[in-house]
Image (cartoon, rainbow over all chains, first blue to last red):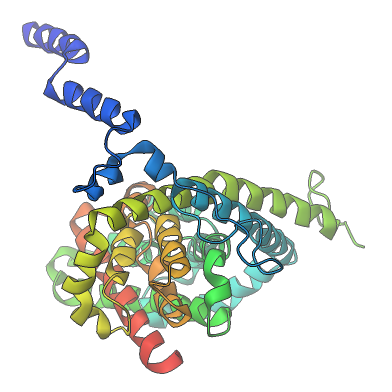
Length: 225
Length: 159
């Protein structure tokens, strides 16, 4: 009991203690926003810690009829903001179409095709297919489903680990690829679906590798399963 | 249009469903892409001003040639481990500045996601699903292998 009280006061004191870290961050804050770090001739690198340098500048219309509202030659936070804004329409279109396609059963069909492959490839029961397919759309929902399978004792610890490996690398693949990756689609020199297919295949490759290690290196752990 | 088997709440009209999805897309773009890419652009500026980009470029130059990438690309790969969107933003920044070209972006593409956001997903995925902590390093090594092999395949077969 006494010990507990002591901990409590310690904890309260902790909140109000002003350590060296606090003073350092105050100094950093002042320097960062003051503008003093920019324009020092010999130490140009110091401007990396200057607020207005990092805020950067918007691009400008260098080539009329070619530059979009993002402009050309922008730098820092301002350029990043406009670039990110320019991605919004393609993300909305992609996620909107995915929503319609999954409504009409695209995901269910994929589930159906995937299920018979699970036992031979990964050594996990077909009923885990839903957790895997869900992971392609939502990392969090996939993780929750996997936990449920284990809690209901439908899969063993080893199967859980293999499924975890499949989900972990390239989690939320469909949504992440079309929402985030779309920023770079215009650069792709191969068809859009090729990197996607490759990543999907590699989810299996990684899980098979994990299955192999579990069956050899960690064999002892699963003797009782 | 049949709406027999659909739940009462959700409209069966494909246009309505599209709008629901587009709204999700808007939220992802505004809440995820914009802050992450803004951060990536600021970090890229810091790395450039401090000369870190150049330093890493020469340090990792030889190793990166295996993947057909310039040495600077290593910053994108390291960032991917922390966050997919930040690494995509960084790559976009480097492409705009001529450090990476279309071929490099194509090679890097699978890496952004196969290695993507491992730090975050430790909690969100491995933690939630209760994968024993003992095997987390194994799973991470699998993701890294996936990313490296996928880049090799992109480099030697597809581009």
